[in-house]
Image (tube, rainbow, N blue to C red):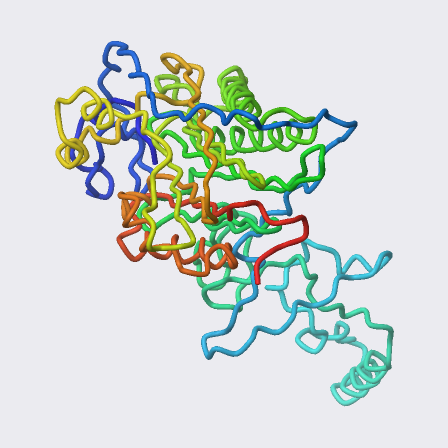
Length: 465
């Protein structure tokens, strides 16, 4: 979770006593609002990042043909939609079938199943004071026989839309997201997300210490005007000290992904398309600050919604990266005997100290100010400086696009390459799950998001094994 260059007023959360990080406006463990925060320091310009490799000469991009794009991303799957097992390891039974159109209202959503509806739990009819006890009992028996006559299936099974608790596997989940049986809070849709689109995949997880996931991603495949394949991945990290960081990352990832998938089929050079996508993401995040006050978190002292962004475009012979903030792209060659590389340079306090020669990398990243970012997307950003770079790898490999929730546990290119499974290029979804697990096993201090793209881009229709 990225942070603006500000410090919290207290070292521990007043609510849960969890340690706070510099710049936190909310407790990462319980979400407590840290209302007393010092003013933001004076503006300091972002250091120019001069790590870009010029676009390769001689790339003959074909003339665009009429095209509306191809390969829109597949739907994101929430954790609750994935297959699971019960406590004994056996597969869960399939959900009841949905009621057909025109079914009785008793099968419609909203029926409460915590009220008994069996007729034998209540008198079938009120006792008639005019009858003796024997006569009344006979009348009740007769009514019971009439009621027991075969009838159409009016006793419908619970509708498929009814959610079952992930903890006790029995209770109904109420509209507030809690189990009516055991009271367990259910995972939210963004707590864990996975998506696979052709040969690329991404996974995002809330982590072990934060109360919500403020990361977001967008992945997809398309084709250039000449039919050559292209893969796209965008990963965004909400700024924790800003208002609605989860909304900011979601808006930015969607806007950038849609911009890239629309521009590449028209013949726009991938590096120009990446630059334009970052600007589109910036406009989307800025628009959140203009929404009515009723849509905000009732905290007027907070900064405008903000996030970081990093992305990659992979074609048959070209790799383009773009970023603003401290999320990263790594290159891991298929031949592990050749060195991996980090392809981005952080917009952060630590990176500025290293670039200025004031600290070495180990000293800078050990400082508590290391993750204070100097570039982000948002209405109160000092100055938007989208960074883009083009590379032309001479061998196959894997592109890793991730937030600091992962690279905090695999910071160097060599450490990241060691964490990537050998078959990640052929099984990107599995590889992304392994990398998220690596971060969680390391402590899961932050939200974790990673996208994997094989290079060169496989032909259309290729996917995980």
